[in-house]
Length: 90
Image (cartoon, rainbow, N blue to C red):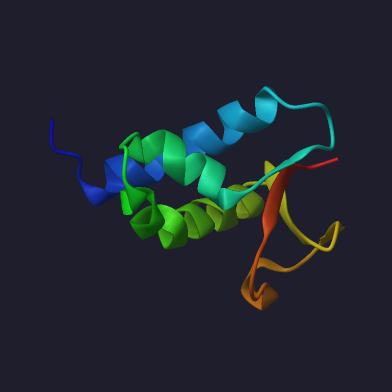
């Protein structure tokens, strides 16, 4: 079944929130966790979803649902460079 870009974006947002709902309060996920769930393949194709996951996380930050962290501390999404983690807002 073909997915357009908007459908994938919304699915990534849902998966991020679902993964966080399954974790302890304050726990984080790696963007690759969401990419792997959405891709659901046996190869490294999930890597193509890494930037879309980061964009989905930024939208969820703007909505007040999550925060992006580096080194355990919240960072402004536009300033995040390198590896990030995602967690529910406290």
